[in-house]
Amino acid sequence: MLAPVRIDGHELQPRDEIHQRKLEALRVFVQHLLASPARDQIAKIVLFGSVARGETDAESDVDVLVFGSAPLQRTDEAASDAAYAAQLDLGVYIEPFTRTCTAYEQPRGDFLLRVLREGKEVYSVDEEKLAFQTAESLYHLALKYGEQARLKYDPQSEGARRVAIDMAYNASELCAKGMLRFLTAQLPKTHSGLNTLFSDKFVKTKIAPITLGRDFAVGLRYRNESRYDGDATITPEMVQEVFSLLDQMLELLGQKLNRESQKHEQENDPRH
Image (cartoon, rainbow, N blue to C red; front, side, top):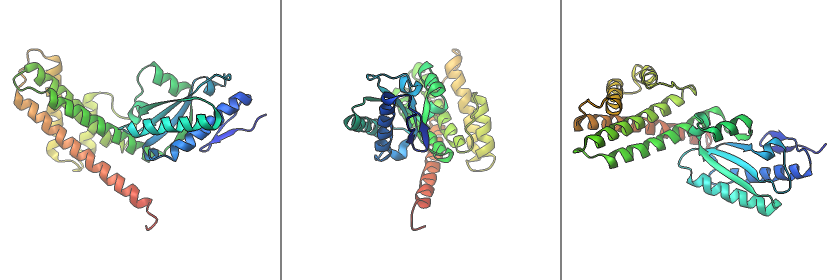
């Protein structure tokens, strides 16, 4: 029996010499990736496809899915560099795919579901770090939604008002999910459930302003009217209320991320 290939505490048993070479290439890929400047963004690395199943031949690629915090540009570049390093070292082609942490925690589509069901995890951060990276990804996604909501907003157009409210409220919900992710990985699946849990954990405890609970509930009502009620009157003032909600939520989550980042830096500072 061939010796297992060890990657970050995980043991992968090769079925033959060809399979062993593929796994060794994976080990080199992970080693280079974790030595890159993108390391702090990387949450999980999952091997999938024929190499994960042990059904390899000399031409088989090594398929790897890397989950990281947004934005993914540094992770994309680092994964490509690591794949090239492995190819130079062992002559094995590695195909890296990247997705955000939120895709890992809320997988959608056949591809992600199949990878997570059949793949083999070869690297993972701890739960505390995963919570931070997921919240960070949600924050950056909220920023994008918020930017688009304002770009598309035209106070003279009812359709634009409806779209702006919908997008800005959804961005506010992403921030709420980011705050809650520090407390639990099991987030509510309904809008009202998320609204209620956020108020229970942050408004009632005075971590967030008491008015924010009311603003959140109103924002949800405006969002539902904008999306589902064609007879509802959607005013520019309603849009501004939801924009204000989003600004408060972005500030709340941004401050939380900053505090957690500073805490992590202090814990890893050898002077402490």
